[in-house]
Amino acid sequence: MGHRYKVREIAQQSGLSEATVDRVLNDRPGVRDSTRAEVRQAVADLDRQRSQLRLVGRKFLIDVVMQTPERFSTAIRHALEAELPALSPAVLRARFHFRETSSASAMVETLDGIAKRRSHGVILKAPDAPEVAAAVDRLIAAKIPVVTLVTDVAHSRRIAYVGMDNRAAGATAAYLLDQWLGQRPGNILISLSSNEFRGEEEREMGFRAKMRTLAPERAIVELQGGHGLDSTTHELALHALRADADIVGVYSIGGGNFAIRRAFDDTGRPCHVYIAHDYDEDNARLLLAGRISAVLHHDLNYDVRQVCQLIMQAHGAVPAGPPATPSMIQILTPYNAPAAP
Image 1 (spheres, helix red, strand yellow):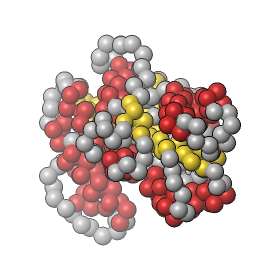
Image 2 (image 1 turned 180 degrees about the vertical axis):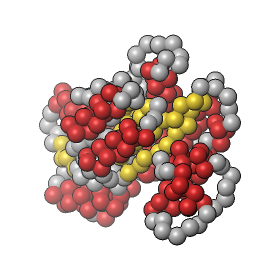
Image 3 (image 1 turned 45 degrees about the horizontal axis):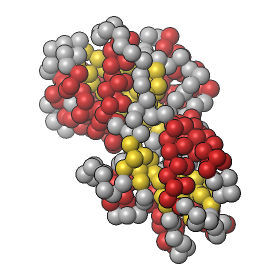
C-alpha cells in the first residue's frame, strides 16, 4: 500500500491508532484482514476528499453513520463529497460508517466509539430505538452535534432532522395511486424495509390516512422485514402476491424494487401503478425502463448542505440561520427524470 498520505491523516480518517495504520502500511504481520480493509477504505476516502486536505481554514471532521442499503449509502457519499468543496472557507472531511443491516446495539457501539475518539459532528440514519436515542444524547453531552437525515430519532436531543416531510410523501403516493388506478378495483402492496425507522413509519401513516379518504375500499397489504435488499425482499413479495390475488399497485417505501418487480413477473401478475422512493441507480433503471410509474425524490445535495451548515452553526463557525426546512418532494417520471446516477 502506498504512503501518499501521512500516517496521522489515515489514522484520523479510519479511526484506528497510528501504530496500527503503520503496521498495515508496512505490511507487518499480526493485523486482521478487516483492519487492513479499514485502512484501504480510509485511503480511498482520502483520495476522493483530496481537495480538502491541503486547504487552509477551520477544519471539521464529521462522521456519517447509516443503516441503509448500499445503493442509498453510495448516493449519500457522492452527494456529500460533491458538496464539501463548496463549504469553503471551512474545511470538512467525512468518515463513513455504513451497514446494510444492523442491530441497535451495534449502532450504539459505533456512536459510542465516535464519542470516545472525538468528532465535530454526526450525520445519522438509524432506527428510532431508545438505546440509539440514549447514545445520541451521550454524543450531545460530549458536545458532538448530531443531525438525523431522512429518518428521525425523535426522542433524542439531536439538534435537527433534515429530509422530506415523510407524512406528506406518503400522502402524495396515495394521491398518485388513486389518480392513476382510477376505477380499477384492487388492493395495494406497501413495502417497508423494517418497522424500526421513524421515517418509513411516518410515510406509511401518511399513506394510510390519505387512502382512507380517497379509496377506503382498497385493502393495504403490508410487506416488511426485507431491509430494502433484493435478496430478502423477493421471497416476501412472492408470498404476499400468492396470498392476495387482488394486488394491483405498489407503494414501495423501503426499496428492493428489482425484487418486487421480479415477484410480479414470476407470478405472471401485472402491476398497474408502482410508486417508489429515491432516484438511485436501481430506481433510475426501473423508471426509465417503464417498470415503475414514478419516484418520489428529494435533493440529497440540498440535504447534506443543510446538515453541514447546522453542524458548523453548532460550533459557532457560521452565523445561526433559520431552522432546517423540509426537502421539496419531487415527483419523477420517465419524462422528467435526470440522467441516471
